[in-house]
Image 1 (cartoon, rainbow over the protein chains, first blue to last red):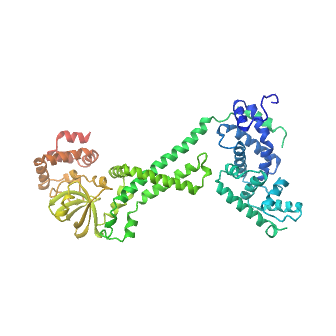
Image 2 (image 1 turned 180 degrees about the vertical axis):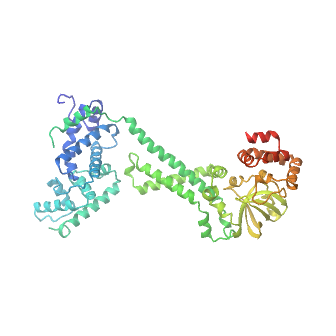
Image 3 (image 1 turned 90 degrees about the vertical axis):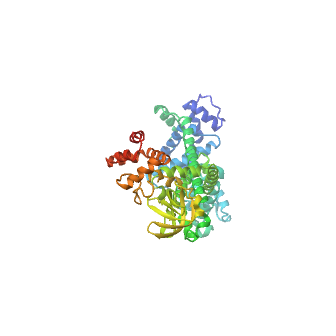
Length: 193
Length: 321
């Protein structure tokens, strides 16, 4: 595979075109998105690495089988995140399981963005603030956590979130507002530390 | 996470001989969604055109004469079947619009508004082109339960005790009396003024506002033509209903032919004296072959009676083909 003559800078649409002609080239798409999607599905609540690997494999197989459904009206990343999101939901349904919210792999940068957005007390200790936010994230509704993850940890725009969740922009905005309110109410004493 | 996930997936693709679903598969799915949407729009618009046709001929100013207050009259004359039918196809149209590739980008309220607006606009165009009338006529001719389901006006106008009577003019007795067959083929003698004479034509469906004046007798105050439902009443073909005095009891149609004695002699006389009446009578027998067959199977004397009445052998054999 290392000898494949593919420009590593090739855009996603080009990689899709190449993968349709040669299945080996699909490994470039896998390589490009494997880590991002692994992090995303774990943030959605699939914590065990075995489960995550199985789901990830299903996602990439689904992506491969549906490559011809991708059209360039959409960013490829939004399309692949949408498939990942649907696969995670169907995985939960199949196993009749609920997302495991504890110990979500959330990074400090995302938490900082979230804290800024919620206008949390800047004077309090950074580590403590992040700990409280992580705990509050564990408590919010899965639907709300999902949109917060996309916005603050996956750094997706409103349009991208709309394309991933297949919801209108207005719905995304109001869902995000509700999610932030839900998160604030899960923080001790209205968000103050 | 294992290091060689890439390789595992590629191996799985190769060993399973997996290949991407063809492009036409997705195009077909998308086209199917649009096609169902377009069909739903057309059907919904057709329902709107029928409702406009019904509303346009609802005689908004006669509700007082029809013995009702406006609210009660409106409730009775709302086309519930068509409203439910329209709602069903609006839902189908909205569902399909929402499930097109970019449908999720629009809110459901916007999509429903677009579906309603498109159905109404197209429905107005259909109505202007006469589609509403055509659909109502076809259903009136053929649809079972037409008077109970498709056209609430028939029910509304079939309440003689409340002063409303609708039916087909089947015979003229004199300048002020005519015989009207209601939807159950029951016959009424309607008394009217000579001013209404233009509307009282044999074979014409009419609506009458008035009052009961006896058993099966009705005094007309207003006589109006009937547009929605006109074809329904034409099922009570006057050619198949022998004229007054020909041995026909109220409520009887073709079966009235099956009688002997002076009454059938009168019918035979009428058939022999009026070539126009005979032609009309035979045409109507041909138009109702199924009923003729059924009656002949039920009663072996039916065909001999037709022969005795002087109906041509060609017509009889054509009816039995």
